[in-house]
Length: 490
Image (cartoon, rainbow, N blue to C red):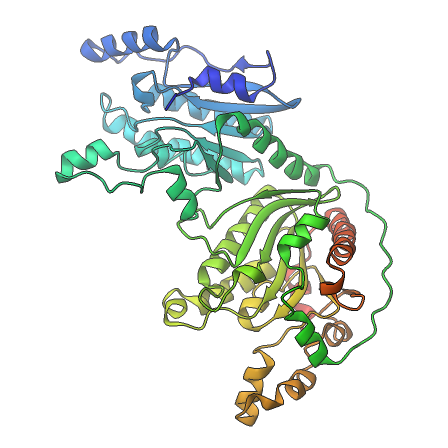
C-alpha cells in the first residue's frame, strides 16, 4: 500500500496554497543517548520535527483545522511533544470555533518514553471532548496503520469516522500480539472493511475523496448554525378518513415507498453513516446526515425492506438510533425519525440484547433531547420498536400510516383467541393517522392519492416539502421542553 505523507494528504484535501502551520518547535530537551539520536534521524528522514503536524487551511473556502500523523517519524508514535502539539491545536480550534479533521497514522505510544507518553491519551481525549461539548464537529480519517494509544484516543472519538481502504486498524498491533501469545492475530479482523461491517466506522474512503466527505458534512452541519428563513407551508389539503383496515393493508404493500426512496426523491443531499460506532450495525435502521432543501438534520429511518422475518429490527437498531440522537445534540442539528416497522424482534437474542431497556432509553433520550425533533410516521407502526422513535416536537404522518401496541392480528389473538378479528381490532384501537391527529398525537397528515404505492415519487416529494417547512420552523423556534413533548399524550 502506498502511504501518503502528512503533507501529501493535507495538500490533497485542502484548497491550494491555503495551509498554515500552527506548530512551534517541539520540546525534546529531556531526550538523551540513543533516543536523541533516533529523534534526529527521524527528523532528517521524514522532513518533519514530530509525529504529528497541525494547522489550518481552507476546504472549499471554509476554514478547517487538520491534525495529521506522520508515520515516517518513529512510526507515527505518540510522545509527550506530539501530544502537547495535538492538545494545543485542539484547544485553539475550540477557542476559534473551527471544525477539526484528524488524520492519524501510528504504531501507538512511543516506547522510548514509556508511561509518561502513555498517559497523554487522557489529555488528548479531554481536549477533544471539550471541542465536541462546544458543539464543534470532529471528523476522523483513519490511515494505514493506526493502532494502540492513537487508535484508543484521537482515532476513535470522531462524530464521523471513515478509513483508508485496506488499512490495518486496531488496538493491539499484530506484531505485539504474536510476540505475546505466540501465534498470529486472526486475519481480516483489524481492517477498515471489517470495522465498517461491524458498525465501528462510517465508511471506507480513498484519500482523494476525503475532502468531499468533510465538505458535504459541513454543508449540512453549518446550515443549522445559519438557518434560512422558514420555507412556505406547502398547504396540503385536509385528509379524508378511510377505514382503519384499509390503511393497515395499504401500508403493507411491497410497492410502498420506504426511507430509501424518500431520501432518493425528497432529500437534496444524504451522507450515510453506519452503525453505533461501538460494534453494532442493524440494517433495519438507516442513519445519515441529510438535507431537505436547505433544512439540515440527523436522519434516523426504519428501513422496511431490510427488516425481514430472518432479521427483524433488533436492539442494535435502537442503540444505533441513540447514536443519532447524541449526534443531533452534539452537532446542534434537528433530528428526524422515521417510523416504518412491523415491530421489533421477538426472540431470545433480542431479550438477551436488552430490547426492552433500549426502547425505554430511546423514549427517555428522545423526549428530553436538547435538539429540535420531528417524527415521520411513514407506514406500519407496530409495538415498542415504533414508539421508541415517536416522541418529538412535531409529528407528521402519511395518510395510511398507523400506530398500535401490536399488529392487529396480535391484538385479535389476545382478545378473541383468533386472528380473524384483526380488522375490527384495528378500528377499535384507533390506530389510524386521522385518529392520532384528532387526539393531538399527530400534527399534520400528508395525503396519499390514493396510495403512496401508486405515486411513490410524487408522494415522497410532498413529504419532503413538509419536512423542509417543518424543519425550518423548528430551527427558528428551537427544541421544545420535555414536558411539552410528553403532554401531547395526556
